[in-house]
Image (cartoon, rainbow, N blue to C red; front, side, top):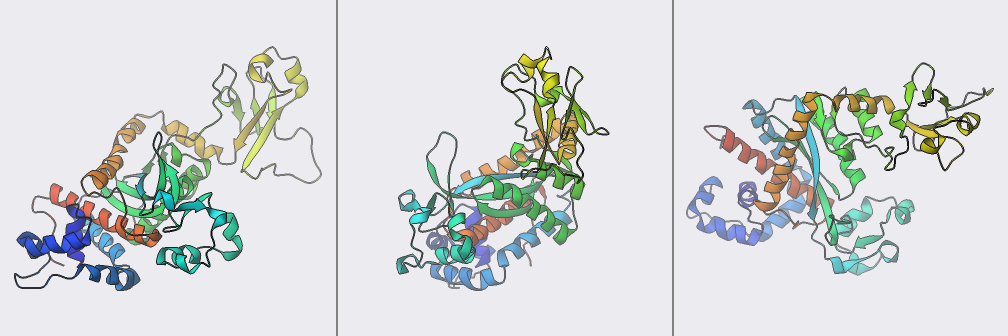
Amino acid sequence: MVRMLVVGYCYGIRSERRLCEEVHLNLAYRWFCRLGLEDEVPNHSTFSKNRHGRFRDSDLFRWLFNEVLRRCMAAGLVKGEGFAVDASIIKADASRQRGVAGDEVDWNDPKLSSRAVREYLEALDEEALAEALPKKISLTDPQSRWTAAPGGPAFFAYSTNYLIDTEHGVIMDVEATPAHRTAEVDSTRTMVERVKAQFDLTPERLIGDTAYGTAPMLAWMVEEKDIEPHVPVWDKTERKDDSLSSNDFHWNQEANEYRCPAGKPLRSEWRAFTQKRSRVTKANTIIYRSSQTDCTTCPLKAKCCPNTPNRKIVRSIHEAARDVARRIAKTPEYLVSRCERKKVEMLFAHLKRIMKLDRLRLRGLTGATDEFTLAAAVQNLRRMAKLLPQGPPLTG
């Protein structure tokens, strides 16, 4: 049955009913699935029973993915020096018309007692249920997220997150999340730590787009994992007008202050307190302000802070990690990494166009995990078949 699913994902056969018909008629499929000419092909309903039973209970698809990855590593297709990460949105098996406001749903209604709804409710703390509800929620698949691509209509979706080795584009890990940027970025930590635990492998550099360039994420890479962040820094301090940005101010680490272009200081505190204050805000930042007296007589005030009496700069507590990412962005290796990141996007294009996985068939986060994990395992199998002269081993 697992080999039949591999055939289905490999050749874009999305319907299990049609898959059973194809295996029944195609001799090559029968040979791969170890079925003789007179052997009976499993019924399509058997897949659903096993998927929600022993397949999921034994975490079979994750085991299959890891075994395929081990063979890729044994064949020398994984270098382990550079990893790239990205996410792609896949439509959920949920109708747009079935979406309602989150605070209008009566979850005690027997009509909503489906497996996807039960999984959703089990994942939530009942006391925080009202706070966790999004503005719009699907009654058929409440774990999916209402989202929209730029310029397109909104729909319910999940995100598949890939962590790949940049040498040959082998997928090192895959994680299913709701289509939400925070969940996508957080999944990177899960995947990197899982690869470390499973294969004792940590990359020297990690490549990603601007979404992964937040201060906490960069600090995790630099300070905790000692990974070079080949990621653009998420920076909103750049000003669109001609006024001075924070980059025009010089930071003095020893004095714990900024110096403006006129040479005046910006400090987090201008007078000493009996009890030491951290000055760290809820957003994990420290605010540095100039003296109002200095700014009043400064000739650069019209270009520095025309609408406020003095200038302030918000500095992240992880600014040192952000500076590391900025320095890396000026190196030739960073330009190479920008090109290598496209290998992740190519895998997503192959997933949707060739393997026909542009819309999920299974519901709930567990269903999305099953589909994404099996699809990633098949993509690694195809990679082995393409790069190895003898193809992947058929035994085992």
